[in-house]
Length: 376
Ligand code: MN
Image 1 (tube, protein in one colour):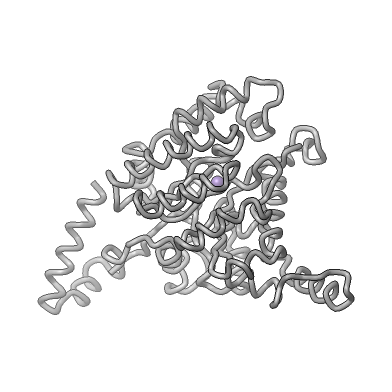
Image 2 (cartoon, rainbow, N blue to C red):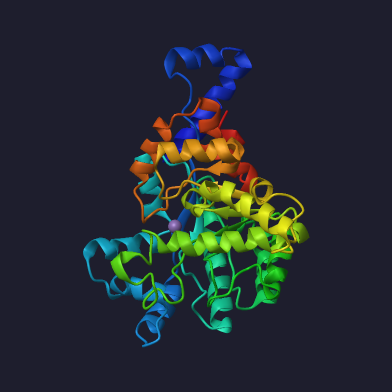
């Protein structure tokens, strides 16, 4: 229904523009159009992946992430059951929620920890199936959904081929990696085929949080520290730091890395990261592969999103530190409320041009999503 209304409004505006009255008519009737809202960290699941998770979660050596998922998978509390239902819905129910909150478009990604808990063969098959399902959903609702290619980093060459298939044949918009794969990180040489394919296909890699391998038993185990409160940011921030400091951004200079949750803490640390790089390099403690300051790479190669971080002062700080073109809006549906994310961004202390950039145009450019028709 929302599409029809917009299409209709678009053709009315086009007709008025042809008559030379569009501006005045708009100003007198509706005022300036609200910014287009493109949410960039929006989760979905497939039945095959959930079934695979159930098999693992039932075992004694379940990954820490799936231990956190047990209550969801058991169908415990109704609200949690409804989260699972929302994840599995990449059709009408999701669009109804988007319409209810004025969300124009979601960039979908396979929810964490994705296929990264499976053995390589199972992971490759479930990722490929998820990408087919995602492409079908985007084909059915091309003005409401875009999507990221799920890959199995356990099989780097297969993952590189899936990036190519996803970006060309399926027409998807980037890559989702749910952080570490069995304790290993993308800066390691075995994963370079993935970075190479992503760079070659202009596919930004969204590094989405998951828990540390030892989240059940290690230092993050008590006080709910292993998940969204702190552990996710510590683990995913570490992943970002490994990519930043390793020199892979010298080897793959056009690679784009996206971090949610206002950059998983890294923007706040840039001064100290630069300071230690300069001090350690100068004193010979570190033989760094970097040829410019870490913060220069961060601004060149990283983008951050506002997922789950609806704090106007944090937004203001990140825009100041990174530039308005490097910050993208996200909700983290269905884990966070769309109403909160929209209210936050509608009222954030930025001018209208920056608001439009953060809300949609930065993401449209980065992920190659065509929204031009509906932002004029
Ligand atoms: Mn998320």
